[in-house]
Image 1 (tube, rainbow, N blue to C red):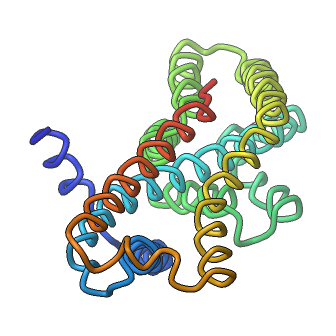
Image 2: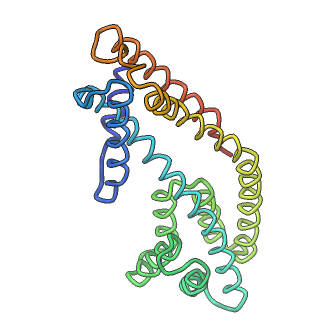
Length: 250
């Protein structure tokens, strides 16, 4: 328990771009305080919940960006492979791929930013293997890391780089196809889970509007606070359980 708490505190490192997550977490804490206790005095007590919420949202965002980058990276190495067939060296092929990815995904896309970073590194005499290795570490994407390993071996051994990249793109494409099929199958379940997350609050609002004072015995007294605290704990447990059920990694 203490180890988990220490890990949460260690992972709670807000950055300048994380303010939307913090605002969302603050709104949820305020909602819990009002719906479960009808008192803003509960906010300081519930505020520690923002730690696991922030860490989870941050991990989900990192996972989403990693997957998005993986999809774009597949197209990037296909572009690199095509450029190599046109006679470019592997370094120049990566430089040419920047233009292709800009047309495909836009200048602000993740892959264009990463390829631009690689091109700048090459101009500063940093080896392509080192730049790709850095990309693999920062992206936290298994496909990119595996590509980097294969790329390094193929370049050192003088292998067929063009064919290797084409084969790698095909493998990544097959994996993405499986992931998309799983996403389609789970889409309805995710929607059901989201609906079930908000149903209890709609019930509270509906009963509160149609039968004013119905829930009053549940607030501002020891028994009511204990019961509502148990309900909140049960709700959080059910939410985490549903998230674990629909979280499928390929």
